[in-house]
Length: 278
Image (cartoon, rainbow, N blue to C red; front, side):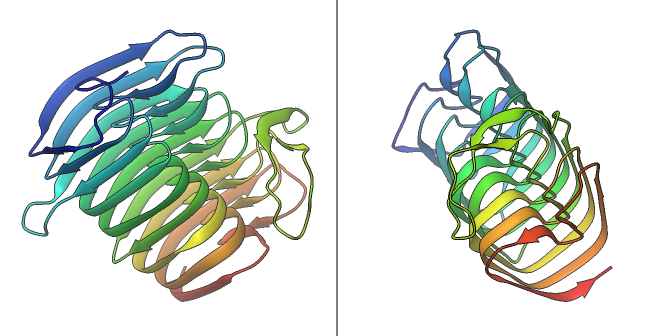
């Protein structure tokens, strides 16, 4: 279900869209997006004031612009801009897309995302993608399950030459309850047990698995989690690298007992090199 198209694997260029509301009441509704329900490609979009809601008890794959994969390109002279986006759903909920967002020269401002399940992200819920020259500000993410991130709930991203600021992430679930997300096999553990609610909460990634973020500025990040594995950049980081980052005003608070960090709650593999961190 999409505000403009249901599904469109081709290109939609020069889109200007405003004041879009998409509502999916299906009990198991999937692929719900403000512009497209499923895959879409585009160039030079200007999108403002979008509300997307999926209320089904088993609904999933809900995105502010696209309910699955989005490729969105632009130029430095005319970047794509996305503003004033509100998204709510259960599982796999992303402020822009769900599974993948590949873009260049994208500006995102004022996005609010909430989910009652797991894999909730300010830009995407899960997956791997590449982002160059990203400018993100005023992102609020709330989730009751696990793997809640300011940009990505679960997965890896390649982010470079970007500025990310004013991000607030809250994982408020009861850590005594199991979420609807199974812990991945990382080499450190092998289990099919679900992750506890309120765990794997991060300012950028809930659970970072792959991808790199580099040559970027990160500032004014606030993270709160009721459980373990809570970090300023990532709740847990398995693979990938964070390097040449200028970070400031990173605040982390956890009600849990272990694995809490200003950069990563739990560093399993990979590397972190900061240029400046305050």
